[in-house]
Amino acid sequence: MNDVASHATGDAEARSLVRTLAPYREQNTGRAAVELAITAVPLVLLWIVTWAVLPLGYWASLLFAVPAAGFLVRLFMIQHDCGHGSFFRQRSANDWTGRVIGVLTLTPYDAWRGTHAHHHASSGNLDLRGMGDIDTLTVSEFLALSRGRQLLYRVYRHPFVLFGLAPAYLFLLQYRVPPSRGSWLAWLSTMATNAAIGLAAAATIWLVGFGPFLLVQIPITLLAASIGVWLFYVQHQFEDTSWDRKERWTFHEAALHGSSHYDLPAVLRWFTANIGVHHVHHLCSRIPYYRLGRVLRDHPQLAGVGRLTLLDSLRNARMTLWDEKLRRLISFREMRAMRPAGRRRGSERWNSWLSRALKFN
Image (cartoon, rainbow, N blue to C red; front, side):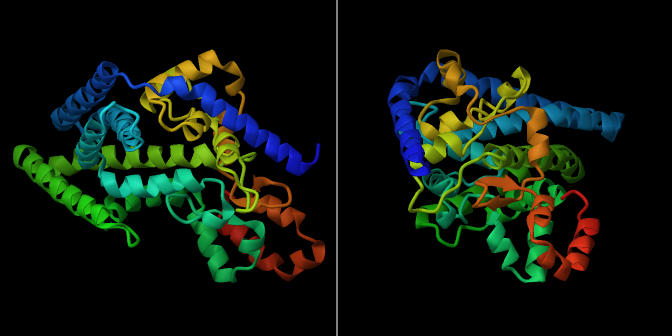
């Protein structure tokens, strides 16, 4: 079977799966309310405990900040489902729950929902990158850059920046500014969320003090932000993901094969609200996260599609460029190894310096 026929067959199979999975889209209001309660209440209690143990030493406080960050990540996943209209049955319940949660996650709900919808509509399309995605270049695009811009891209893709500095910038700074291509609703969402965050912070500072507030809130926020960005990265940045130019790209094929199944241990699946079942989520985003586990149990053939273990995902952190010929993500090291010897000599000193400066990749 040639590549075109295989691609068409894969798309037809993915479309068929959407019809098969339709019954799982039904929301359960009672279940959703319980999921919200068992996430929000422990988060608040852990925040209080983290503050209460500060007099015993900051390291003791940080021990409680770690699970608090886990519950904050889970709360963001509820906000994520609200954005897809899949958490509650009523749209208004989804939207207002998402907006309130956005104050805690520092994420303006309506503005985020717009960019995230674009991500779902264009994921895996090489010609529609740039909104709601982690910046990814093809090998040819990277080689066409100046040395300065190559360096910037390599710095951006370094784990310390991508999972440390970038999440802090995204949630603390970028989300405070309305998107330049957003609607009036995105502007209002951002400004209203900023105002609500300011009021909530002021009230908490009045109760516990400015210093203790920062000592508790900052580590919880930064750790949760880094976890969130890592999860988003792993869901689409893996070696055998699927990217195509717009003439070959199809939504269903990209959803099923361009998204991973991040097969995490049970406790991490709970804290991440089954977001690791991302190929099914992209194929049918109206399925509530509390039904995704059942999808895999009822359709075990889906468990092996794009499957990544925790160890696999750590290795995939080196994958930084899309090779359109090999049709997979590769590392900078692989790119250098594949270049013709004559071309390597011309930039050998430059690549050697970059390798020493950015040892990870």
